[in-house]
Image (cartoon, rainbow, N blue to C red):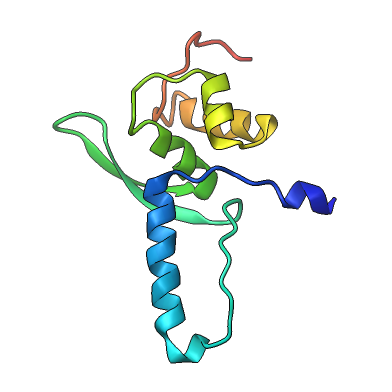
Length: 118
């Protein structure tokens, strides 16, 4: 379904600013004259650094949707599912998968409350 591919995900400013810088760089390259560049936030990966505390910092390779969700946590530590859903505009089922993948005990990036399978 074409309409499903046109979903407008809300991209946090930190990510949008990086995309805009790269877009400017891309457009200034003579080899790219007349070409357009579009970002597909559902089909990429990113390396991000997460500071879990003063002594623990990790670099993770995550999907772009995971990156968007993790960026939300720059503003505060605790968010409800509904708040993240409204803020990011990621589809409910996709957001659920993204969050659960980062809440898994073996991964330990996010903590889920209540800590039961839903």
